[in-house]
Length: 521
Ligand SMILES: Nc1ncnc2c1ncn2[C@@H]1O[C@H](COP(=O)(O)OP(=O)(O)OP(=O)(O)O)[C@@H](O)[C@H]1O
Image (cartoon, rainbow, N blue to C red; front, side, top):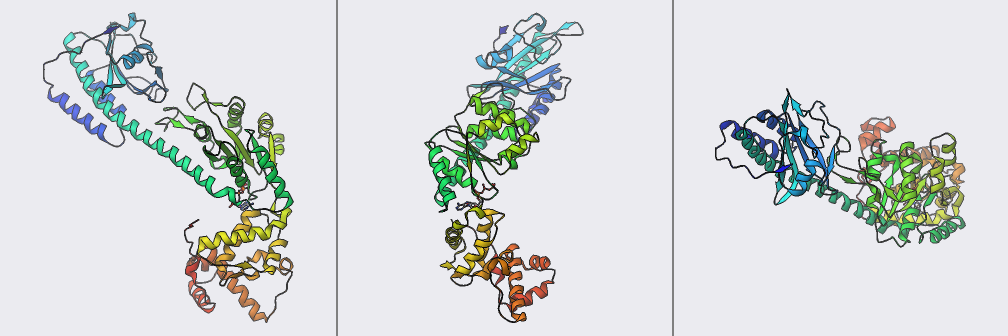
């Protein structure tokens, strides 16, 4: 392997080269840099057999083949070199060009790209020059060619160096952009985590014995590093419990990263959880840190855990057992120090029986289960929850509601709450919006709670009065669910907009107050 000196060429470039450089400059300054096009043009101009562009990944010191010319496969599989490995690795490490006059006779030449060593019986040479940017080597540009004259060779190398430096500038700009994006993503995740930490823990409301039992469990497990599995129906407050565990743990100053496993498409879940290396799959233009790494030293909350696909379950098992992850497309395991909290409303035991949940994973996560009771099993919590939500929505909607009548509380307490606290919260928000004075009354509650049986009352008044009351209620319900949109509300009720207008006027309803105001909490 020869390291050679910078060739000295005194000739000026011809019009062909200048046009080519102009074209490169345009291609490399555009927003979407098309490196393959640049390399193809260069290859054609140089009459090279092959060209390889390799770029150093600053995060893991791997050198990835970013673009090729002259190879048969349109898309080369992701090929990489370590620093110092083979000719390409050595050029990037030393920053010095290398010439191999006959690759057939070279033992340093790894030929990972399987290029022919002779063409028509003539020996192929390999030239690799570093791509430099501000005294740093950030990659290499190499080509294979059969050479006759030395002079031609010098000119080619000179052109290669100029193009290399143009590519270097463009690639560094792209790297810096990708790194900045990643940094913003990390900050965003961290801020979201901090925001969640601030709001949730103070607001777990519940005086019932069943909730007191849950609080005891939280206080026992929070300070340990044990994996917690929170179970319970949808809307019972599992996420609040996970927050509380993190907040009361020694990790509370570190990130709390939430992942809704059901919301991630199956083909993206692994890269979201474990991250990916650059070039791991189409679209992976930069290395990306996954949620596990983002949660390092803190807690990861895997919500809707029962929805994780079986293929990902195997990998999670390894993370839980060995506390190390492997990025998609990566080769080295990365250690992570993460406390895992999972939540599910699914019956995991049934999922095991029907084959959609791994039994070994179940035993790994079922270390400390916490069952959160359904709201119908703790109806004594309803008055205190209702008051908590009145305070919350007073702030959100700029209201000054002081209390809720005992008849309205009775109605809340006899209802069966299939949607649990989330449903109660929505019901109280609606009541707060509809309430015109400082007291929430039974008629402010939604029709689902309004049956004589559920409210333990029968309606008083003439038929006309009762019908009017119901009509007004239905109109207001429609306005609440369409956020004050009269046309949509009319369509929902199957009446014309004109009829809607007449009734809104008759009942003195101000549709503007149903338009959702931003929350200031
Ligand atoms: N004990 C509680 N005190 C105050 N608010 C609560 C309580 N429990 C739940 N909430 C509120 O009810 C809503 C639903 O709670 P959360 O999202 O934690 O339920 P979940 O069990 O995680 O639901 P899912 O299974 O659908 O994800 C949230 O707005 C939460 O703030």
